[in-house]
Image 1 (cartoon, helix red, strand yellow):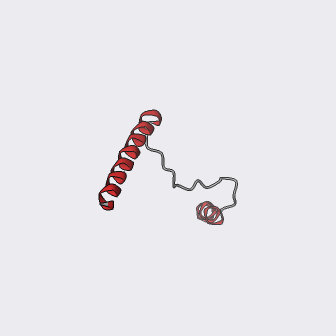
Image 2 (image 1 turned 120 degrees about the horizontal axis):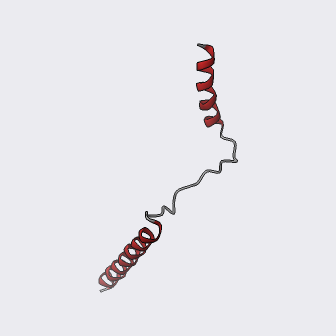
Length: 62
């Protein structure tokens, strides 16, 4: 009996989530990703700096 009740709760949660997703798409024009990590541009990124400079060096040497 508990399994049926649990399935009803899950079904209701799915309906609510779908409605929220539709509202987000309606207001913002696209679904919003809440799990994506936004990297600050102020933080030093060594890998990115290396790739930027390697392109510049290849053109200056040739």
